[in-house]
Length: 410
Image 1: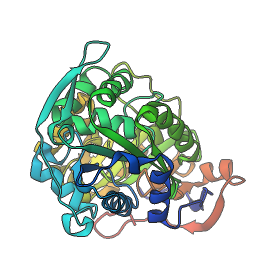
Image 2: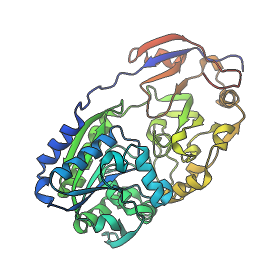
Image 3: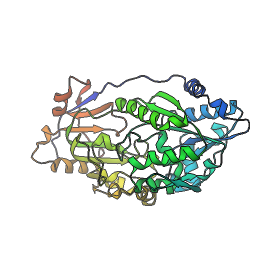
Image 4: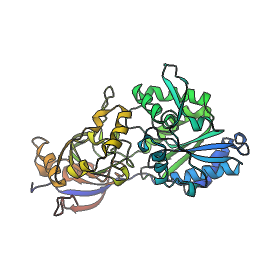
């Protein structure tokens, strides 16, 4: 192709509110729920760390560890990430360290184990699995970001309740949750865990659209489900979205686990691909082209099946063992299907233009984003810009739709 639409670089305006002193806020919040009364001298207290790229997670976990020490307890880091990290002890420990949550930096041990206990059944008859190390501890503080989930819509999605049911259930727990329907099974499982396991507190984190920590909320065990739902409502009000509903071509420069559990946020791109789940009404996108896989994904391209077109270089970077381990646990196999792929990014994008119907390239509604997490700034074609120009800030109106000599999108 030699003709492409005129492109504009635009900026969406999102809230900039954030917490300036992470440690002080963690201490203040834990004080507010009277946790000091629950930690006795020499108590072994587990502080969870998940597998998502949460901003300030190292600072928040470290502050929690320091608080436990101040109370006289003996803290340890408790990986709580279901089947992630290759579903191995060392793999999950490595994921923690990747986020700066190492034994050296935290000043306490990481006790990573995939051993579990069956501690009962939900009211629907589903087995409840729970991490053995956590169960045998004197207390667990569940630390997690609260945000919408990419697989379902419910009052409790991704947050401290999900970490109880899925993260601390290790591989068996994660498998069981996915097989029995996440939206219903997660809160029911959490109720059993809260009754039987030594959960002493939760710390819910909410990020603004810039990924800055804007809320840290300590939660009592009996308030987990209610407070998690309230924090989700706040998070949803802050979540970024694409600036228009109808798009011919969405180009996602990079997908990866640090951007979303599915590589690309399903609710940003408007695609779920889960049997039984209703697809979002918008955005309605004819073709999604995904160009690269982040190095931080370590070959796990879960979510590539959400794209229509990709590039051979991305396909060649896939570690199928890592991806399938994650994919099979979710049970949503469609998300691991590799789409049509071509030698260069230019070829892949040109195929998209050639398959959107009777739309002239110069008139196509095109959006180019770096990833589905960072969508404050992006490129949009002229037809999109004319529609949204009163709602966004124009950064550059002379952007060339161009590729380098190897066909890589600039």
